[in-house]
Length: 73
Image (tube, rainbow, N blue to C red; front, side, top):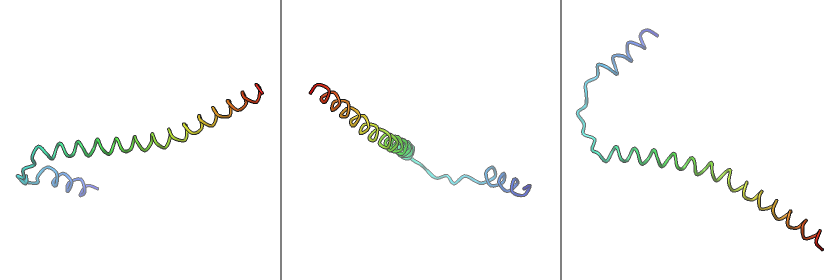
């Protein structure tokens, strides 16, 4: 465990920088991809919950209307 800690420290703190240029478009792309993934997850959850719930409410409403029509007739 001690060797792993030392190797991790050396890797993260004593590595020389690469001097690579990352333009401003990279940050925007990362933000857009992150927001897109989050929105996709919420849309999937919403779809899995909303559409069955909507179908249940519609069936319940139709049963209520049918029972009201039978009482009137």
